[in-house]
Amino acid sequence: MKWELAIIAATVLAVAAVSRRLTGTTLTPAMVFVLVGVLVGPLVILAVPYASAAAVVTKYGDALDGKVIVDITNPIAPDSKGFVTPDGSSGAQEIAKAAPAGAQIVKAFNTLFSHVLTAGPAEGRPLDVFIAGDDAQAKTRVSAFIESLGLRPMDIGQLPMARTLENVALLQLGLVAHSVKHTDFFLGVNMLS
Image 1 (cartoon, rainbow, N blue to C red):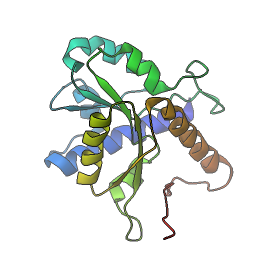
Image 2 (image 1 turned 180 degrees about the vertical axis):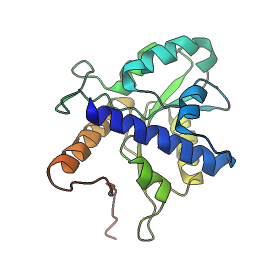
Image 3 (image 1 turned 30 degrees about the horizontal axis):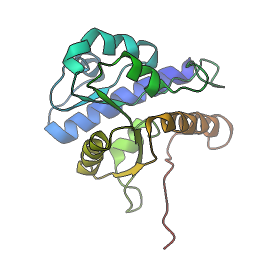
Image 4 (image 1 turned 60 degrees about the vertical axis):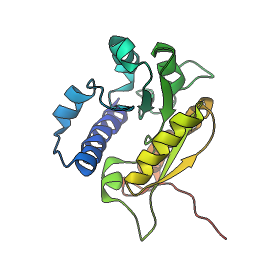
């Protein structure tokens, strides 16, 4: 639970930073939680704890129809040894079950710590944002959003690959707990040629 709360706090801070960068509006973390339900534009960033994500999506129901829902949650169990989702599923897939039929779910941003995201490029290279989703147009929209932030989208495939991204988040928590001992890092792709 301690790590889940840290991830939620980091996510809220990241959403506030992204909003500040895109709109020039300064949002406090508390405002992000309030504004997460404001459905403006084609993208909705789901910045709530995973435990309440499906309920939030259900609550806004029809207002989400036709939207791209960007799932940034990590459904990590309180002991940080696994997940709270059913075997063979991901948080994003469970959220998709609660979404209206016309909404598209794209998993993104769940592998970047908020302060790393707000710091931007590292040593001259953009940060990689891994994405997974079933709809090509939705992934194109999310990729354009990511690029507008000076980041590099990396498409890893269909929505079931969201479980892989959630495993990456679990890997990062393991690194923090057992070897790296801090969150001043990110995982990305280095091209050799």
